[in-house]
Length: 381
Image 1 (spheres, one colour):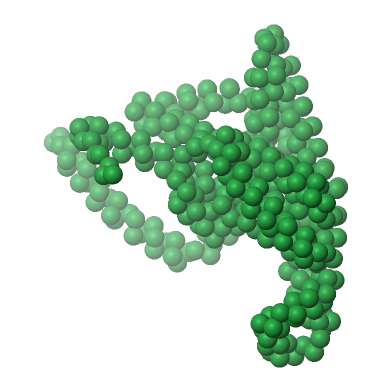
Image 2 (cartoon, rainbow, N blue to C red):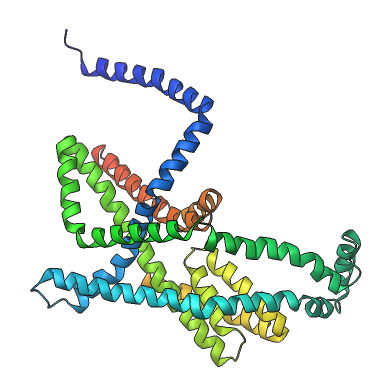
């Protein structure tokens, strides 16, 4: 007996209703073992994930060099790709070396000065009656007799939560061998992806049409195309924007003769990579570092950074990034918040293009359905 289309749908829904509770129950009672298995799996594939991320970053300058600077170079495309990739590697390596060699030592010195300058800062703040009252309450609560005791009590906390975290970041991998091996695998995989990206794209397209119907394959390819466009547009715009903001901040601080101009400007630049909240956090930390050396310079810095961010938000950012991501501000805030809760700084970065991809696909689906139903909604003014 041949089943009708509606009967097939009912059977499929019934199977789903039966299977889903079984899967959920299995996950509930075997969550720990599944978590361990996923952790092991992620540890195995992490070099390839890092390699893909590295390839994605290197692809941005490589595309520009290959398609813009070497636009008229039509012969020997393999050599053209190799030289473009080599220049991209030099640029990225130079940026990393600049941060590691010049900025990080200055950052540690700034943190050290910040800790050592706390007594002076506290004594300056005690001149204000309301601040003095609050400080006295803190002193009484934690049995602090003077500002020196405050530093003694704060120093272990700052050391534990500052230096230990940095140590975990830089030295978290158990052995030097595993670090080198992971780097070699990631780097090799990234180079392979960059040299073979056109071939891989063609093979993926062919496989999509082999294993799925034409309609489903088209949907899969559209999904990945939109996702790539959103991720590429977002990170390309954010990198350029971060560099421009950091550079303008350095020039302004240098002209205004503010202390720690290079360190603070790098903080502002890196903060600008994180939408909405990053620039605020970078500015707050920069102001705190400057405050230890000069209260008046810190006030000047706050005024300067507000003016700079207004200029950036109204002039630079729209021209560089514009509406390429196509995600309303409220959803950017939601994406940053959820990303921070789930994956920290990395989540704050990647959840914006993820949300932008979902938003774009839902928008296209909505427009198609409204068009099919011949519905036109006019907004009220």
